[in-house]
Length: 112
Image (cartoon, rainbow, N blue to C red; front, side):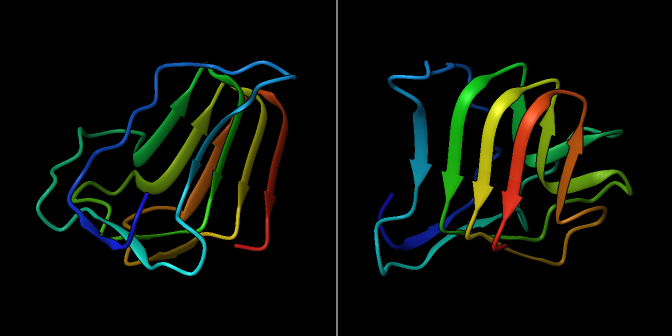
């Protein structure tokens, strides 16, 4: 994605494979913001970015802000997924965790 501020609830639905992982990435050197200020997330455990039951997925280089309004809303939430990498992102002003991981296997959270 290219520079800009996006008011989006991001819910990817496609898994990759070991040979061809799916990558959601900010363009190199560009400031890409996912801003939840005007996005009302569902109550309970939901994230502004939700990676649920996916495999071979990678997310890098984003700034995630203002995830809410409910107490269990995270910036990035990974649930029941495998072979996932969350790297080089920044979170700010999230109601719950900046990055939460519940269930799954081989989930790497690094350099955030």
